[in-house]
Length: 108
Image 1 (cartoon, rainbow, N blue to C red):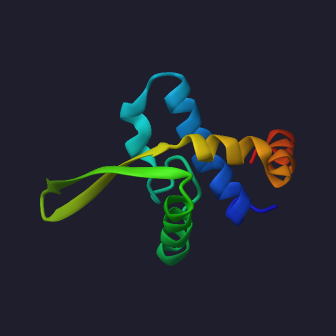
Image 2 (spheres, helix red, strand yellow; image 1 turned 90 degrees about the vertical axis):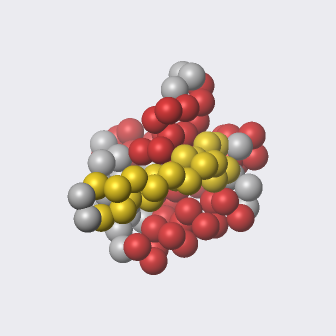
């Protein structure tokens, strides 16, 4: 699997949000952005489709949206958190097991 395959990106998002919840660090949940810092940069349409699907399926929750002015540009910062349904999905779906094993093996 490639680093930008749907299952890989979704697994990384859900796993990251789960770790932040488990470790009590919700302030880092706003780092879920398509900027390459945590995940590979993918085209905006693909990224938005993945995030929209995770929200509409109830796997993540979109919290507050904040706008920041940085010189001329405005940045949108959205806070996300994983839901119980997202945690259950991560652990019950067999494709996740395969994805997580490949990621551990290949260091994706």
